Image 1 (cartoon, rainbow, N blue to C red):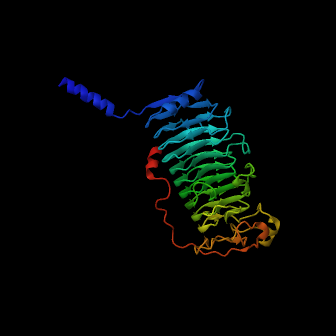
Image 2: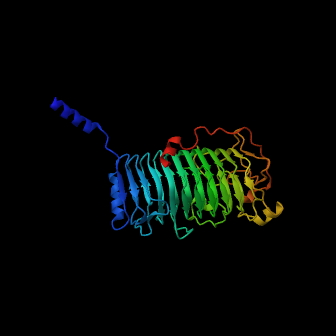
Image 3: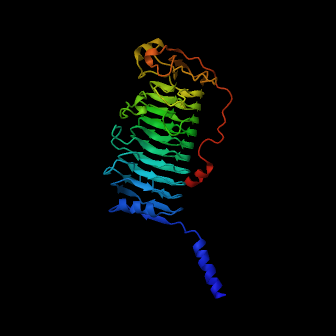
Length: 402
């Protein structure tokens, strides 16, 4: 009997999962090594806690263990300072599923702030990424950067100073970006080559462009669409473009509010749009040459519903701006469309009757402003409300931030 009991105990010991642990890392000497070691040795379910204070980082960090939480004492209290970073990579790279990142800050990484690649079911909550020197082309490209992932929640976070996009989600599905602040970046928030995304209740200001919804050629995942942009405050995006030459966002005009390019089934409504002096809302085709036969460069089924908006393009950064403004009586109407359509039978653009607009009336993709024939906008009106069932991050991610 005793022998059987011992055997049963041994079996239970082997079969039972290890208890999750909480490991606290304090700032100070050796913090780089201690934190990276904790991230490497973490087991699923573990929580790595950053104590309050400033952590001097000399190299990027990485996490490749599923279901780990990295938590700080608050985005102003626990700061991973990469000012002395030796390499050029991101501050933190996550390549595992089910990760929760919350309540800490990253400052001055040489590359991106936090990149998560192939990391499904990830939560970014109360994360701050800041380049403290303000807008510079030498800053990292992206602040919060999930890519090639499914089920992403970005909530209550802040990014400033990114030389591409503050909050960028690329080649991903089921995305929610909400309650966040993006300032002093080239693009505040960008949803690129992604589907089933909700962007809501964000404050986006002092960027070159506020919120971008793009689909680009020559990427592993194309066909962006099903994007809802609602209830955001998009104001005073008047920072001169400081993106490095060659980046697609380097072509975004200063003063762009919300820009939809080559995407399908996008709904923009109930936003507050002020002081975006090129265009509060811009809907365009991809303007560059491309060779990929599977790429569709045109916007399709884009709805610009009612938004609270100011007078529109008061100081547009467009070729021939002075003549354009004069032609429209001193201000360009709030909604700008390049006039290009896919020609596949689907309606390109619907605009709420109270949202005035204008069109470049381009004749062909890639034609450029030299071939524009500006005139009043002719577009249909919004029909039935769209269904967003299945869009956005799943409710199970919500539980991790309560």
